[in-house]
Image (cartoon, rainbow, N blue to C red):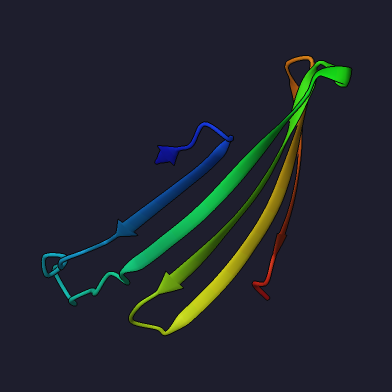
Length: 89
């Protein structure tokens, strides 16, 4: 994860590279997943907290599927409330 002085954070992750050993009865292929996302934190001193907005893309390489996730988090005096939206059905 990389942070910027303006409160922007970005990250990239690649999961399940390589292969899985053959199991006793059948072989299994792990789907390679690529995730990229960003978040922006807005300080809100009037409520003694902050608002964070985030989004990420998730791509499953072998299945040619891409998903978009959006979310927000309000931090009010050390208590967080979260909401999210996903295009998954």
